[in-house]
Structure formats: structure tokens, C-alpha cells
Image (tube, rainbow, N blue to C red; front, side, top):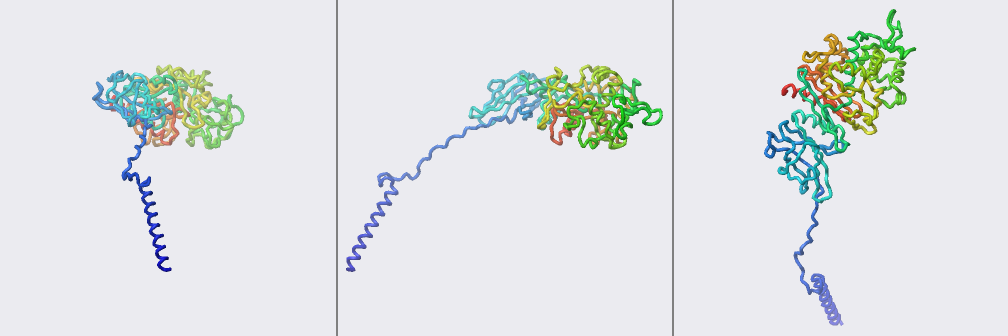
Length: 515
């Protein structure tokens, strides 16, 4: 029995081994062992990646490829108002109708300039007018448009302007400078209307809203009336006769705003309006400006209605005691000009500036469709704001004047103590206008001018301005150089004002040393 058992077990074991061997061969051979294993199968080739990149990285004009170039000017490439702009300056002697650009674009991309295939460093183009460059990716369907802005000029100055445009999204800038009362530099940059077809470049004679630089024009009108003996800086504005002592005259505008006034309002003089020392401040109106606000108390109201509201409101401080920048005061000065002259503010302003030979200074219209033919378009960068959202009939004498950069320099040369261009005001009157009434150190305020600057020490007086879609700065230098920079947009970035001040100062320094 035992030997039969072992014989049967042995037979079963041999059978199991044979089955396992057959399964192993079948699994390794893949087909019952009829086909040998391929020890190194060839993989399928990967699908090639087609690039979608279509960027312009570098754009320049090299002296090796262009006659008359002693250097290799490179462009500032930036997205401004949702357009890709290429901003570049070449010397005045260069023929821009035949320039060969050297450029770098995304790998395997192609480029066309003015619809013509462009090879870097080889193909010549006419850059007299704005030229469109299209960079197309390797995939053939993805592309970017770049608008090439080439101008002749001083690259040292122009790079200052391009840097401001690129960093702060400014489509158009106008700059002008005088040296020893001669206009030595005037240039336009970028676009007065970037939406038009074709785009409208900024020309030197283009009109810009001046924003608060308008205040200096209003002060010029007031001081002209002073020289004509028609008012004094010490005249009261709103007071009834006798309100400030026996024999004190009725205020210039009392008949417009009669009745009982807020505390201390009857003490306000013309000089307090000129120096922002009326005693009114933003705290008086709950932290808002009656000129630029959507506050329900002022929205849709006329200037007269807004002034009437303030005349009935007590001043926070004694008039003349505390400086507090207040736009409404200069709007009231505009009403004083109209009351005394019997003319509109614009009409009298134009009469005064005509004495300096300027005939193209105006008060802006509110709507874009009503702007003057040589006036730029304004672009707001703040969501919910509009470059045309402010009522210019209200803003008026505090911020609605429009002028060109060269004309502003011509006006400034007529009120800067110079002897080459006759001043339209006497020296004694200029002394009153440029006196620092609010501080014993640089950084105070005169009549419509900021006096001195703690950092920009070559500036004797200056004023900046901003409203939605507008930023401006002009300065009277101590070294015979005056300058102005006008923008048709305003950046909400905190360092923007400092940037345009620094840029203008650098431009004026270049003019002083090079012209």
C-alpha cells in the first residue's frame, strides 16, 4: 500500500512540473514559444511641440546697419492702454525713411513690419509714420501687434519720458523747456488719441488740460487786476459793508451771496483764496472736495450753488492762520474775475495771456465730443472714473484751463523776472505773487504757486496738477531754465507724482547743460 501511494504522488508531481514549465514557456514566448522576445523594442517618436510664443524682446537700430548713427539706440517696449508700443528715438540727422532695425523675437517666430517680411539687421523700412509690426508664433495662428513709434530728438531727454510712459501707462506726453527765456526744447511723445485710426501723435502744439496748473493762470489774472487798480489782495470777498470794522467795504461777491454767513466767512480776503488759507478745509465738508466729488450735497450742482453752501458753513480755522489746499477757493477767484471785469473767466484769461503773445489758451469743455480740434483725449486709469466725468463749468478757474506746453513756457517767460522777454507784471507785483506766505522754508505757497522745493533745489517755484485723465507739472528754475510736462492720463500709483517731478527736473538739467 505504501509503495503504491508513493508511486502515485511521484506521478502527480512530475505532471505538475510539466504543466508549470509549459505555462512559463507560453508566458515568456508570447505565442506558445513560436516568436522570440524582442529585448529592446523601439518606442513611438514623441509628438513635436509647436511654439505659441510671439513676443518682441529687443528692438534697436545699430550703427553698423544705419548711416548717421554713432550709437545703437534701443527701444522701450511696453503695453500702454492695452497696446504694445515700441518707443525709440534717433538723432536729428538720421534719415528715418530708410532704417534697418535689429530685433529679437520668440524662438521660431516670424515678423512683418508694415506687412513686409522682416529679417533682423537686414530689411530696411520707412518709419516716418507709425508702423505696425506683427510677430507670429511658430504655430502660425498666434500673433502680437506692436506699434513702432520712431522720432528724432535727444535720447537723454526722451528716455526720461519713455520710462514714465511705460511704467505708468501714459499714452501721450508733451514737454517744453526754455533757457534764458528762449524756447530751446519742445516735443510730443506717444499719442494724443490712441484709439483713432490712424492714431494721432502728440504734436508740440497739442492742447492738454492743465488741472491745478490752471491756478497759476488764475493768479496771473488776479495780479493783473491788482496792477490795474481794480482789486487788492486785502479786499474782503463775502462780507457785508462794515462787517470787519467801521468803514470796511462790502465784499466783492457779497451781492452774489448775501445774508447771514457761517462763522469767520466774512473775514476771508482775496489773499486767503490765493494761498489756500481761507480756513475752510476738507474736514469742513466731511472730508470731501466740493469741486471733485459725487457727494449728494454737491452732485449736479452749479458752482454758485456749491459756493453758497460753503459760505453758509463755518470755517474750521481763522482765515490766514492755517494752510489747507482747497480747490473751491480758486473757483471763487474765477467768479471775482467775472464780477470785476463783466467778462467770462475764459475771455479775460485770453486777454491777459495775449499780452504774452499766447492766443491758444482756453477753458476745457466737459464732453469728449466738444474738445478742440488740437486737443488731446484723456484716459482715466481708475475703475469707475472717466476722463470726462468732471463738469468743467464747475472746475473752471481751479483746474479747467487748456494750453500747449510751448505756450505755457511763453507765458512763464513773461512772469519770471527775466529781461529778454518783457514781463507783463511789474517786479513788485511778481514779488507779491512769488512770496512764500505759508512757510519760512522751501515747500510753501505763494499766490497760485508752490514756492521752493526741499529736494529739487533748482526750482524757484512750481505747481503740479491732476484730475481724472490728466497729470501736469511746470517749474520756474533758479538757473534760467523753465520747464513743463503734460500727460493725458494719470496713474493711481503712489509714486507717480514724484516720478513726473523727477523726470522734469532731469530734463531741465539736461537742457541747462546741453542747450
